[in-house]
Length: 184
Image (cartoon, rainbow, N blue to C red; front, top):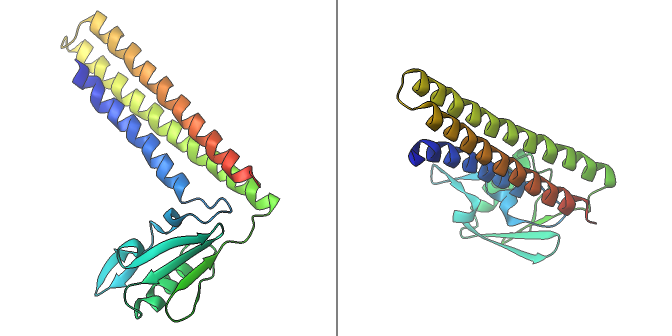
């Protein structure tokens, strides 16, 4: 019986995890190397993550430093950053690329918080859709007499508990990220 619920619990967990990953790419005024996680550069014909072709460090609170292992990658990495939606202009000295993060304006912070809330709402919708799918499956099984009425009610209650738990987790994650963005 538990494995029927388990698959849906895992899907809900993955929705929350996906939200956290999305949040890690949102710029909050401080340099965060995870902003570069989704960027790929052409490395010998293979699209490769920047982390696998360069050392990335944060020497100051608002600076990310990228030191490619091969100097010919500097142009590729700069191109990937410029073409991304990060809104940053890279500068290089021939060996190292620096990304300087400007202070966020109050308006920009409010925009980012709206974006954070929208992403949280999408995650909640995903969790609720998983609950709906689970309940539909359990109803079919009940109608086909594969599970008893008591089992059906029990499964329905448990899937609701999971839904509530993950919705609260999404809200907590959203609050934390919003606070981080609004902290000057």
